Image (cartoon, one colour):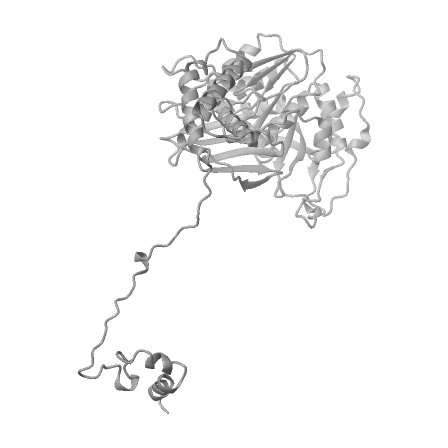
Length: 494
């Protein structure tokens, strides 16, 4: 039987037969006739239904019933206390007390039936928006979060334990995000607007803040906050976290007490500032320390500390005070130690000259990926000072000034580890010679959770600077330099 005949039989005798009989006025055409409708028989044309014409009901979206009230109350609060938000004569406590009182009065005037929990929530959220950092406040209060990245008012990412994840929190609008940014930068005497659309600032606890707004930020304002621990990390914390070993900590303690000049090298977000803070904790209490930073982040615990912070130009392009200006000025302040938050320009030359002219024991950081790269980076930064110096002269300055380079890295499992402690030994021809004292064992593998099992191991080389420890009365067991067997014969490439 042919295909068309079998289908006709199915329509006539099969389960669909009763459907055909239920509609005798307009029977289906026979497929054996080629689909033609017999003459004289009326047909009904069925228009195809367009899918876009059918209304599709969207699932109900959960709407916060307090949104409208929050917007009205926040706007009213801004109108009442707007002029006092940046009043330098008011302390933060006075401003908070005044604003909370006004906020309570405004909520009461709304005459909206709210239970106690809703009223408390409303006052807290509006207070965070106007006086605090809005939806960021909960993230800032979360000690497990180390970095907050706002990609737009509706997209916030956070870093926990070295891993990135998107947060459920978001701003209600671009205007709310801009208010938070302006509040942060105004507290440290900075400004952000269309004429100056990017800024570095800090929070009261020292957390680093970078903000950039349109027209530079095409998709809306962006805000990045690198949080600092409420309690500064100590060397014990870094040993517990695996950032350094006990033997390494003993060596670094001795290096700082012996007034060796130290460079902390690493990439962005590797923990250079945290390590710098820990190293500065080894400085004896009686010494005078001058710290120089773009935005104050260091949390030194000694009593004799002078903190200096650079200043950008004002709206007229005047009044700028650079890191280099502060380094030069610090030499007139009788420092025992100069601690520079980061070398990123011509101030590197002034720092090297200070290290070579009686200001031993200075510490700074630089962006680079290895100890050898740190030397090349310092050469480049010296050239940014505008001095036409030959490369050999620059390298002689570096080899004479720097004693130790500490390389810290953020590894693929999210952990921060010191991967090299390297001695700068001097010059061999035109090359600065380096000798590793500790290196990280990359070949130990990973555990079931993907965490690296390796740790920093001694190379067995006794550094030259250790010969001076005994003369300075610094006791250090020679066994800390003892070589440990690497998992394989070679460490990762430097």
